[in-house]
Image 1 (cartoon, one colour):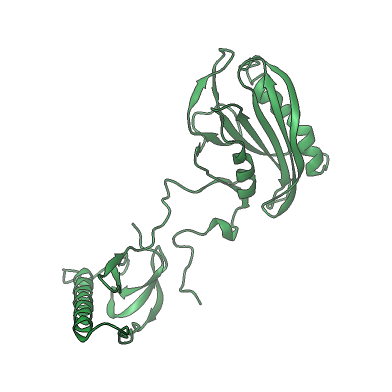
Image 2 (cartoon, one colour; image 1 turned 180 degrees about the vertical axis):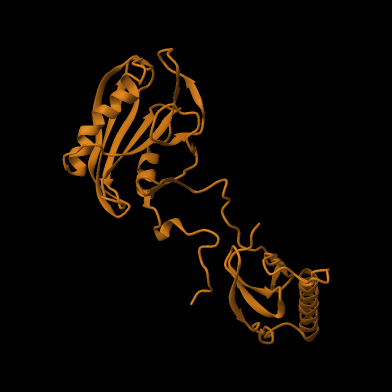
Length: 301
């Protein structure tokens, strides 16, 4: 694992510390900070103090020897300055025994916490039970439920319990997020539960719908609007469809339309995930999304 940004012994000058930014060595160097003498806690006997100081001295010597061995290089050519620093465990003092403190972990690049929509400049939180789109025929899908497909209730093709779509509004007339959301919800419902792109009816068609939630909502620091319908279908438990519209933070700030399609019933995703995903949408580059390893090129301050 790549070590996190921090001060480490300089491979080319072990008597100094050098700043590692998470990806490579920078030009920042400093003399190692010398810790002050340990302060004995009040109460233990003289024998207990001697044992504690002896244990601390043993750990300190072991750490110094380990660091010297790791940075020694082993060859006459010396240590490559581009080599990542070696992290050795540090020990926290305790009244009984010393236990190792593991180095801070970094999120794996193979399991990111967000899904990025580069076109619209936003990210979505990747909640438990959700995955990146894979083998999905529909366009503009940014997330899908991770439980795979199932035979559609009407016996036509395969369906998924949950999908989230993101696209840029194509209307040429300038409209408010409220007007766009109210206009989009019917199209989103028909495409999700009435007729698919092949003009088939996987759920037997939509029989009725009712509005269960609507109103303004803040999305990525912008004023948006959402409309949510409960849909009853001829086959199966039906589902929930939500149209969410808000201005993009990139380019011409065209409205972004996010559609949610959740099957109802015990097999569908938790309805609360609509609100959790909506609340977790961020503009690309926001501080909340974090910069990852290597985002800091120099030491803080």
